[in-house]
Image (cartoon, rainbow, N blue to C red; front, side, top):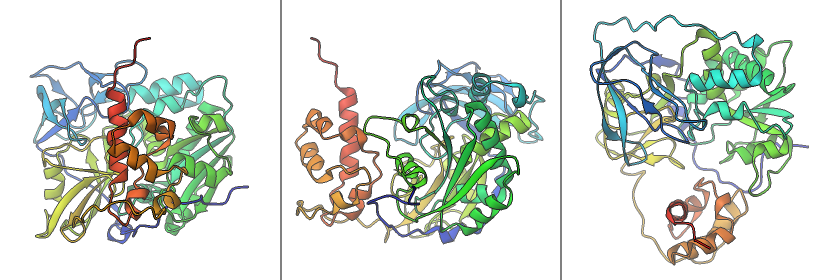
Length: 441
């Protein structure tokens, strides 16, 4: 039996009241959109346009480069001004397609064929989703078509839709469930057919009663969908935590959700899949929460992919005088931004503007062996020991202590009374291991 929750975890302040009740608004098109070729897990897309080309909204501007890749599409009609470098939300510089948006264009998408999903088999649905450039909208940006084609030797029993949205401040998924519940159910219908699954569960934290009510009120009579109200705890929205809360099953170390008969998909992603089969349009815009005490007018916005951060903030009234730090995503797992010209990508769930008071740094002190990090870790690691190994650069030894199972949720850093940035140390350790050359036998 499931428990509606999981062991360990933390309870950071939610801070969702700033935008939880604000309806989604559409942001006007900016003067330029910048489309990084790397917006998803896997190989970056390959540009197929050149400087001077005119594109309509929804036209493909970059092709997928293999199975673990998706194409990019123009989020606005305009003229390609070049394939040039731009700042990426992860702090690196990447190649991007720059499009000068046509000022007086009606921004109507080019007429396109809407896929007839009822007659498609699972592989064909997956191809249509890939061609539409759909990736996970919960932050990881994992290509959505991969989850539509699980290994043939696995049996999927349950589709789990992730509506937990446990990160503080963020409310984009909340508003999707409240304002577009029928689209969530339609996307679930398509995915259930593609996977051959008869039962789906939508997991929503209990701090979103209006979302639970909206979803339950619109469940189609011919679909076996259950809406579960879950314990409010971070990181309830992590795949392994959500699977345990909904099914009572534990995903073993080194294994994937498919190994326990489950597929997890974010509610925003499932709504985007539904939109592909409703309109034929690819993923060219997304709902983004712009929030925090450092922004003048917090909002839930439909933003064209590739809109620069400064344009989004300007539309929300700009920054308050005490604004200190801008984070893409939530404050627990998000990335601090250093450049206002950074574009919002498909994986940008939110823009959180924190104040000086909220970001006041504290001194890092020696570990006092209190064990709070161990008590908070939702995957039962030993952050205290891993942190000591990280400080010594003993990365290979960290692998023996299951560093790969760490999902960088930040719970250990949050509770550490010594202010040790454990999660950041683990992220750097993982990056160092990826850079190491394999040993030659």
